[in-house]
Image (cartoon, rainbow, N blue to C red; front, side, top):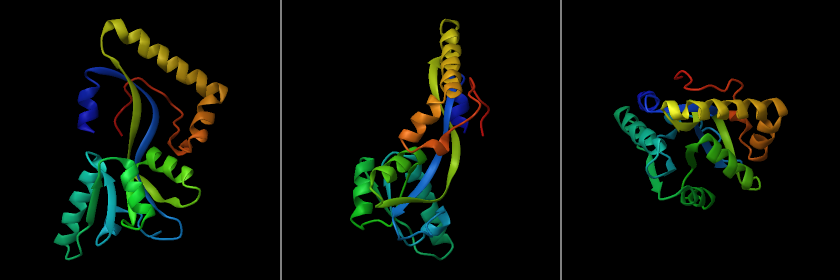
Length: 178
């Protein structure tokens, strides 16, 4: 979370959602792959340049240090590549941000499911430059989010995209790091 703290020195972040990393598997298979520790010896799909790639790389080292098989890390240029590898059986599990995997599972017509609970949850936010000129804009965004919540539209939007698990009840400008 140090990166988020340093960013908040430069921007007003208006929180609207929380997300972490989710585990997505083929329906009816690999339901036990619900933690980083469980990935030892398995082929795992991730998108290049993501925290998930960093996480499985570090976990693979822990696996081998503990005398277990390394993770077979397959990093793809985009999320579609990782999802295709999952559907074709080249990987046992795909790790991605929870809303990304939730949406992919929702759109898969039952082919993919999310297993376990997301880890590393942190706030998502709308960033506004931090200056006196923009303080009012961040407050207006905060007010709009509260109006969306009061009217029920916030929940409707998240439900439409299958990511209602990331809903928050207290929107804030520069929320505390979790």
